[in-house]
Picture (cartoon, rainbow, N blue to C red):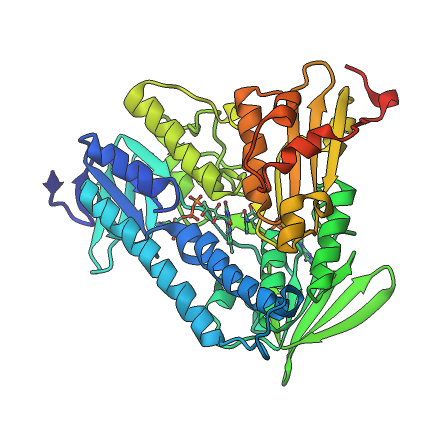
Length: 477
Ligand SMILES: Cc1cc2nc3c(=O)[nH]c(=O)nc-3n(C[C@H](O)[C@H](O)[C@H](O)COP(=O)(O)OP(=O)(O)OC[C@H]3O[C@@H](n4cnc5c(N)ncnc54)[C@H](O)[C@@H]3O)c2cc1C
Ligand SMILES: NC(=O)c1ccc[n+]([C@@H]2O[C@H](COP(=O)([O-])OP(=O)(O)OC[C@H]3O[C@@H](n4cnc5c(N)ncnc54)[C@H](O)[C@@H]3O)[C@@H](O)[C@H]2O)c1
């Protein structure tokens, strides 16, 4: 239904979805297929961060970097390759082709479902209306009783003198850079810093990561962090821990970062600077005040366990609610909302496990509790550990870096959490996660029959080992 008034054209729909990310696109499709009239507003690319500048492009170039790495190791396997060189243009072209195919798949899925996709930037005009100027320059005010916000996040640029003017890149900028950096300096040793750091080191760049914390991955157990740090150093990544950038400036050769740490000031020069210091919710430009939607001190939208904001009929899904910022979580947010609205099933965000995998090599994958957390909680638990150097499959394939750990409840023998730092760690972790989801005990996994020689088969060995109790003096359950 369309009305002509002064100002923007007034349009009425059943549903507005803002942002075509990992929740917004599937939700718009599901609601349209259920017969609702749905407008999906997206300002840049359908598919959002994951498809266009996140998971898909990074995992595609990680694959190229892994091939370069293996080719350099070829001699150890008795294979001669000659000198290994990287054609950076072809690496980028392969990545772009995969991104394009995923993106166009998302677009055609929405078209088939009958979703009206409007390419433009949405702003709230009231609690249940949104103004958008589409790419043809036509302003519209769209009204709907249901509004879903899936606007995601963007890179956070720390407030460092000179940072904005020195030609630094964020992850999106680096993915689009046509040349391979000679010396990539990375500010931040989190997910993005580590994945990009190893990629570029393996492609042939010099890489230096500056991390303000005293070590990597502060949420992880110390033995896991030490093994990950060693693996990355072995691949040529250099680290500066406990250092803050006090300033940065552009030089004829690239950039120069002034670091301030316990040892005083230090200058670090590089050809390019990647800012990988976290991300900020895309809420500041939504005019949320007009809708009355509440945000927290960081600008994240506040939601309840069913993803409802404080305003009736407005939901927020994905990273914009402050994380956990993963594609699988955003997609599950979609399923929670879809099931509540279309199938009358009301699941809470608290009912799910939140696994994650850092796609370094070895991958760092984790679900549930680690040893440190079990100790902090004073749980009566056992810790099982198996180095990858004792996994038959890893020895055969020559990829023995890392370790597996599992935390098991002393009383029930159920798995409370696991960390796998190893080749294909994310896949092995999923086996342990399935055991957690199904209430399968550690003894049952120990005695399970798995194909030989797979990485998963080594879970027999993990639970055959002698466990260590989480420090008994702190056990208080
Ligand atoms: C480099 C990188 C690598 C990553 N790798 C992984 C990985 O391996 N695994 C993993 O699980 N996660 C990964 N992530 C995180 C993952 O990409 C996000 O968690 C995921 O995309 C979920 O995002 P979302 O659905 O909340 O929104 P997004 O995918 O961010 O989509 C939000 C969309 O909203 C649009 N938008 C914003 N504001 C407006 C507005 N006002 N009007 C209209 N449109 C708007 C944006 O253009 C965007 O398309 C990675 C992220 C990055 C940056
Ligand atoms: N494989 C994956 O699942 C994957 C991959 C990439 C990104 N992501 C998601 O994207 C999010 C953002 O990634 P990210 O790496 O930007 O953030 P992050 O929060 O993972 O890491 C940021 C790091 O930068 C450091 N830092 C912050 N300010 C700094 C400064 N001024 N100087 C030096 N160090 C500084 C922090 O201490 C932290 O270690 C992640 O939290 C994750 O949810 C997931």
